[in-house]
Length: 228
Image (cartoon, rainbow, N blue to C red; front, side, top):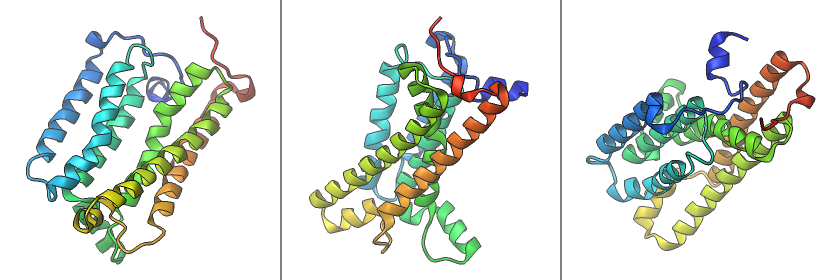
């Protein structure tokens, strides 16, 4: 395996033991997110949707801060989280149904729907499965392939809970805010498709991890985390 893969890949599942005050890479990622968040919070297309969509990311960032000492992830895992948070912030700023990135994709492929939300759901599954796998692999001490399979299930569960969160929000919001927040874009199967893309992204990510792990160890069924 190349030095690049050993340094950045989840397959080299070693704890990042760098203290927070010395982890300058993580400091830079945090600063980048806060800067992007502040910039995108200025004059969003829909203020209500911006703050509504920002609730979960804010809670996630706070939880990651509290869990840093107990469930420390690799910088690669934090980078995956950062990427998803920034994409979500972009979607919240422009609204997912009117995001310029999705508009460009629609024009490129000659379709009418804005597919930015689908893209973000796929990337969510692709990237967030990485920190989920790290947490499971070190916490539960299960076989690597089992941790990968469980990560896919957890990603699908998170996607389903988010769709349920939106559904319950629909019951409380007025029609104007509801249409902006949900972004169904006249697709009755929107929730199911979003969940499927998140699951597909996690399957691709975890399958890649398993294949590369086999290439590294040749005995994936023997791979378990042993506390030193």
